[in-house]
Image (cartoon, rainbow, N blue to C red):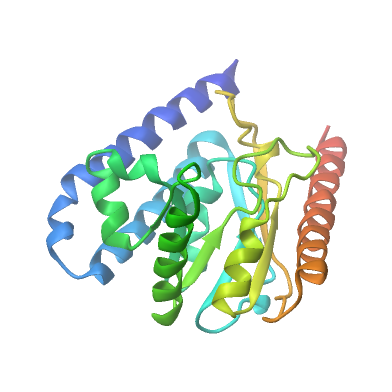
Length: 245
């Protein structure tokens, strides 16, 4: 019962702080992108603190030595809303691929354009794909880190993998390293659940895959790296939970 109450309080604080950020921070829309990105990082750090002190969820980051300098693709496991903001402070100048519908939301969408986020229209065919690749090439030329969720949507912790081929199209076109990211966030912030579970979310950056690998090598290597490490993190968390009990 207490954890349910803490979860409710966190969700209230999360949405209230996010709304305050995009509304009160709206003057940033008129300034340089760097100012808006700095505010985005502050917002992410604040949500991480709210998770810790309200919901009892801490963050541990591993493998930072595997991050490459400059432009790259960051291919992350996606189990929770957590990684939609928590990856921001870990990277130098990140940019997300986001569903195009999100850009239509007042304030949220305006800031998404300001940040340089890339809209993805999944149902609009080859033309939309070309536009997305063109924007991605520009972000990479600017030296940014392109965050993509290869499975396209949140998957429950431990669910069978469902990787899409879109990640290879980006990798092939952009010709930059790809850093896989494993995590266990779905154990603590499950999708479609109000209640959060206390514990430690781990984000683990894995060794980068070099540019230029053929599809038959890249996709299996990416999936194996992310899934093997994510499964290890899930088992580690379950053992720690058992020992604590």
